[in-house]
Length: 355
Image (tube, rainbow, N blue to C red; front, top):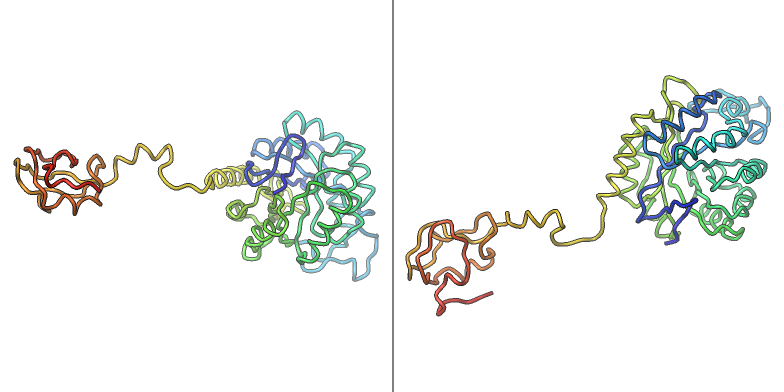
């Protein structure tokens, strides 16, 4: 599998999960709040914060007919142009937030939505790009992003297998050498029942690249399950408080929730380990609590070993239980006290048969 590397951070199945806090429109056009979200992301354990770089003009046109009215989402009834004006992040904030992120040890990158936003982010030295699910079919945009030579994280919400393959081929043909895919359900919020996380190992098998999840549920269990299925990236929206109403607040985690999610994801990753049989280092001291054969009644020299005076019990200092049938019917070569672990040297040599 090809690893992804953003600056000095490697991303792949054997690396700690790469946690991305999506700011989106949760700043509410308040720069100080945007800075606080960066601090909250760091405190919660995120590796990176992601912005979105667009304006209402680069996303759509100012039109009020039926095609530009939103239906069936949390933004029902709003005009596209109005929504994007409300949710966008001023472009120059990327430049202003970069030193804050650097001081905190956070990576900062963004999602471009057209070629002009790519041009701007290139000018600002963005280390990587995220392509949103809705733009996976915008092959000219993918071409422009790929030609930067930067790592690309591509969300696959709503996309068919053919569309994902076409997007990947476009990236590769345009010079992209590092990319990752995110399983995503583009509903806001997304129900856990529609996450279809079994797609994650299938994407890994088909494309042999790092795969993650862009999660719009309000659950911790979903990203944890994704990690168990092989995901190595988790992207989730972060807000200071859902009471600070905004276009994305309803499906964003608050800092304490995000921190709990990060801890659970990292624990899940650590628990996967490797394929391993036998005692681990921490288990070795427990081997003594296995069952073994012990003398449970005093035995005289020459007396026969029977079900009455030898049993398989804990702890594990005696012969293994599989030797029980070989011990029965043999004779003791000396007096043996109750509580003595059975060993072959307690059995008369003429009747001793080792397994």
